[in-house]
Length: 211
Image 1 (tube, helix red, strand yellow):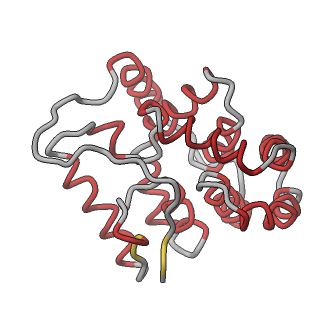
Image 2 (cartoon, one colour):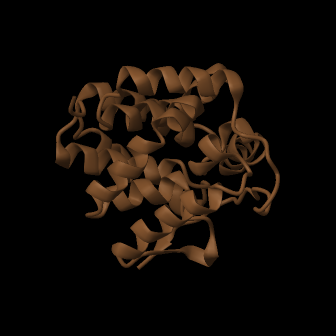
């Protein structure tokens, strides 16, 4: 089944979500009015959750928002923003999964800033918003289980960032029954635990793509 949003609406949604899921800084604060205006162009089922996140970010001092982001994403593996972690953990097969993301970015002439991992969710959302939708949607759909697991974890913690992931899910094609079952299994079992052949995951505060 197709996504609940049109292609132009998906592009706007992915662009907003990409920015909101990156480490908040002074530029983020300056962009909040623009992000709010863009979110207002979306259907209410997408605009309302995004507005709640924007209200949260606008209603607290930047240092508090930054510390909340670090506590949410950098200090908890269950809220990992690196998509290949959910299906591969820190195992040897994660290297091939990462290569596919790197290849997708390279096909669009993009690379990760400062050599960061290419499966960073905000970077893939930026790719989807910036003309690489087909490639990005394929990768996002393949990792739908991890995205759903991330959203469930954020919801369990009552994190406003869960709203962002919920809107991302709204912009993706509806999952199959098999994908939903796989997500439930992943939530129960967790990522593979082998710690051989790949450097441990190291969280970062902010990353983006450079053209």
